[in-house]
Image: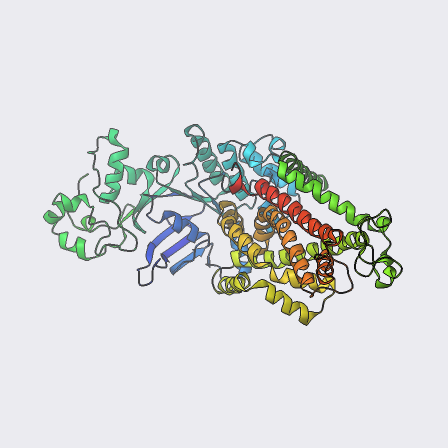
Length: 332
Length: 302
């Protein structure tokens, strides 16, 4: 699995300072370990508010990391301004809303060329811009160069955003909900584009999404995030066919009813990141505890007292759940 | 290829500017108060430009009125009569329009430059720098502004240029606030975040994304500072803190008042400068409010 890791995140924490004096900091990202290899597409899945966007921004250096380390391409996270600049040449982000991420005063050409100009790569600018646009499915590119964002459709705008990232030929592309603001009809096209680009450029892609179906369509591996931490990670087929963490099981049971899973509706809401529960962060909503299954396994006291670690399994997946450590496996 | 690429980009930028300008022009033409302000302002501009045609500069000198009657009513020789030492009032009025406009505009430039720099820095920088700048800004917002201007004018001297700098230096606080607010909203935009992710430094973000976004607001705001500056100059001159040698409108009013022309109802002495001050303040205010309506998206459709 870990052939030639491009990005290695080790115990990454991001905490937002408390709003009020004497309040507790919000631990939006609370200890994430994640490795991404070259050319691999990883989906980071979680409910809204689980810290997935914060983590994505932290990888790009747009959000300060309060603890832990991020190693990209063999180098630990850039400290000096020059390092940061060259880092940004190799790692790019695509945001959720293409309309907001394009300056309405700039033409398509200026938008795509912006990255080149920032890095002083003005040789053959016109050619590079044209090629990037065409590679992202906007051809003939000449028709789009002088257009302004408001003259484009949502899908075209997202293609422009992706082209603007691709001109720098990044090794890692972080896509934060890349299609959730787009029409269903163009979602597939944009996802297909990301897949093609990943394959052709040997580019690693981290797709941040709340949509398991999307993750299933595009990703090689899926990481499931709950309340600031990854609770399960594994190869897409494996994770979807045999989810081990009760949270993943619950998520899947709602999406993939047709596979004959019994629907489990989780009770309550995700706790506030300022007050992460003791023990397993999921225990208040865990179906295993509520059904008494955990008690049968004899782990119920550990669930409320001991924080489970992300433990690798022999099939390459990792789960953070006390139930999976015990000899009797939970049946789905 | 590269050459053609960059020229087409430049052509595109200019085409966009032309389009934006013609949009503003169109909207301004349909904004009645704004258009009236613009006409009025053009009138004052022509008036100031035509000064040498209307009266010779030498008629401003005290000696020039030696052979003329004092405080004479308007006649064919002196269209707006004479002052207490026999000088032509019209000559002082037309040359005074230059002084008033010059001080108003220069003071505005000073105020806008300081206000924009402070506003940009306070909006863009976070933490201590921003807090210090805001504290300074608060000070200039609440400090009684006329006494401060008087003190500075007395200390620094009274030439029109120093007067303009003094006025500009005391009237930037409001625009700094306004610009800071706009910078705060602009720098939260996703396209600024995108530029940062592309590796952009603060300079790039400010020059390419923030400044073009606040520029219209700065222009509209500047148009509204001019009348205040002209009014301040008039006030300072009327109170006797102006430049003794240059005939501004405020100084004319001061002369009219101290010579007792109001008591003897020599209206040709105090009415024209008063009306001119009202007129130019009105013109700039009407135009500035109209530009604000056009440029500030929050005021659209109100």
